[in-house]
Amino acid sequence: MNYQISDLSVDQPDRNRQTAAILVEGFSEHWPESWPTMESGLAEVQESFGSGRISRVALNTEGHVLGWIGGMPTYDGRVWELHPLVVKPSNQRRGIGRALVADLETQVAERGGLTLWLGSDDVDGSTTLAGVDLFPDLLGHLGRIRNLHGHPYEFYQKMGFSLSGVMPDANGPGKPDIFLAKKIGGSALD
Image 1 (cartoon, rainbow, N blue to C red):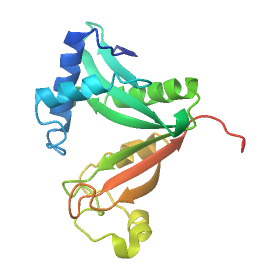
Image 2 (cartoon, rainbow, N blue to C red; image 1 turned 90 degrees about the vertical axis):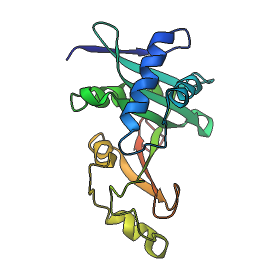
Image 3 (tube, rainbow, N blue to C red; image 1 turned 180 degrees about the vertical axis):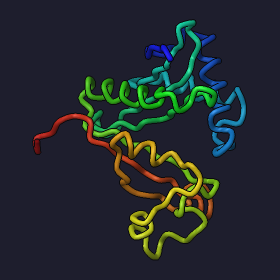
Image 4 (cartoon, rainbow, N blue to C red; image 1 turned 30 degrees about the vertical axis):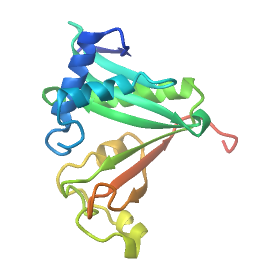
């Protein structure tokens, strides 16, 4: 599949609507409350144009949006949050998500970022971290995590991210947020 990755900007209303539609569709199965409507999707797209943020899309040869990734700086730009990542469901498993993550890593490194992190919710029992009280042995549960129903944390691990934590009950009782992080730039420790 031929595609290119470029900036998404506020002055591209058609691409912004396509991006919002992909966000709503892409999260509807496992995270339906994240962006349930076009209005909420468009609001998220508009937020991605905030100061210092990165908003990039994969476009096919006709200029249609296939996927979207965003990045937000924290810790004075040394650490960046990957938020969000979505690929149109009909185009998943074709390398687009991998290409978007690699592109974001390049963008973050060019801005002096050292670490890229993300949170990936488990609201539907996709991992062994859902539906249990994690507090008695928080790190033990994280160390024994298993993927039960295609949770994306394994995708990120294949991209070089490491499990870095979990926030129990972030989305309600038994619905944690799983944190992953990856070293991007060099450091004085190299």
